[in-house]
Image (cartoon, rainbow, N blue to C red; front, side, top):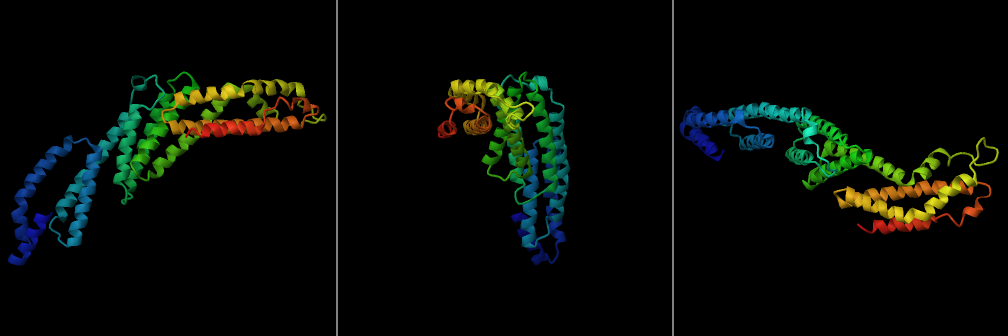
Length: 327
């Protein structure tokens, strides 16, 4: 650019016209074009192509600010050649994901999959290259890629035999993708928001699965019976005999079970902080279930005998805080 600018200004000043500049530079332009046209058809680096597109754009801005038009047609020609190539290479990535053999890619491991890490790093680079550009076409392509990746991820998750493992696998991968996007120091935009929603929804599913695994009877009672009228006028009132086994079972093992849940979470999730957030959410949800059970018991006639068996809410809160301090 600097050479072209200098020579162009010299031609204008010395010869009084710019046609001589194009005659002088026709040779260099031809050599560059030959090399460019030979390399481009065999170039499959989407990030490299987008870098060249952005660099070309910056060169156009610099020449525009200098008010030197000598490279306008050449830079336009380069830009027109790069975009279709980028689109073609990007579509190859999409096709590869959509046609991926799930059985070949699947590994019996709930930790983040290597394909998802490659996707995360690829997307983080594209997001970074779109900062200050707001290129709608690129954002649309990234959304297409996100949908294809999520479809593949769900297919890989279904290869696990247990629903709990499927959810853990999804959470680990969504969390890893978000970590890479945030580590890149970029605003992930729509892509990041979508994965945050997926992480949140799957975390809710896992919390429920974890609690049902250890407190199934208590939760089912709370969901089906705790909200009913406990008075004797009710068609099927809740009785002391119905809730007593639940209360005694919880009192006898709640601390030990929370420790088991803690160990389960620690070994299941790759990101310690993510795992502790999930454990905290599970313990908070358990507290809500137990609070509803306690409120239900208080409304039952003759339930005062169970008071000594009930675990105080403050005790459960203390355990939640104890695990929260592990951050």
